[in-house]
Length: 241
Image 1 (cartoon, helix red, strand yellow):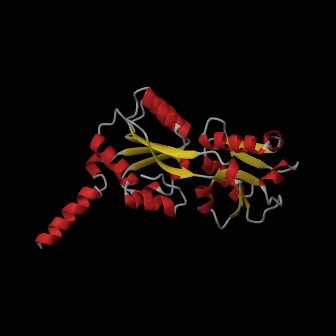
Image 2 (image 1 turned 45 degrees about the vertical axis):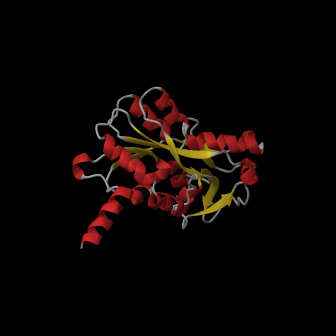
Image 3 (image 1 turned 120 degrees about the vertical axis):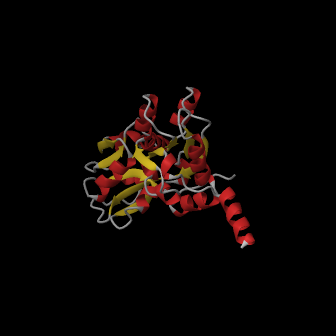
């Protein structure tokens, strides 16, 4: 009995328990984290949206405790402005092109997206997925031709996924992890590894949070071995610690 108690205490120290109802935290997180974060910790209130939208809400005083972004840009900015504690990189990702399962546009490589008449969906310039997409198009030297076919610029990656999965577009640029959630409805067209921009996700505690210990516990849970394993199973890369 005594050994069991000691073991339980040891586990609790290594992997802190999920936040209690009395100190339930709110986590603002990029839309591409919608499926994975609740698998790591189901207790917080989650608000998933575009990274830039969430940053704006934090600047306006929204009552969040943790911010998880799909790009270092906004966490680092908010940190410099004194709104966040030091951000930490917790995951990486890659870009892919998705097409409807029936592939009506007959897209087999990213270069096919230059063909006139195709309907392409990308992210808005203000959100990370939009910025990353433009970076890879520039690297491939096909920006002008592909942009002629863009019919919609979405404010978060879930909007891109939905349009392609519903057949409202012939192709869309998304994160590799987002393609997994609609694998039965879309096909994936890989993008050249050499052209991939570095995609890093950062996580930070909000300085004004009234639940600092619970917020830090959440961050620790995401960075823990079980948290990293959940991220990997969802298709994310994890930085070496």
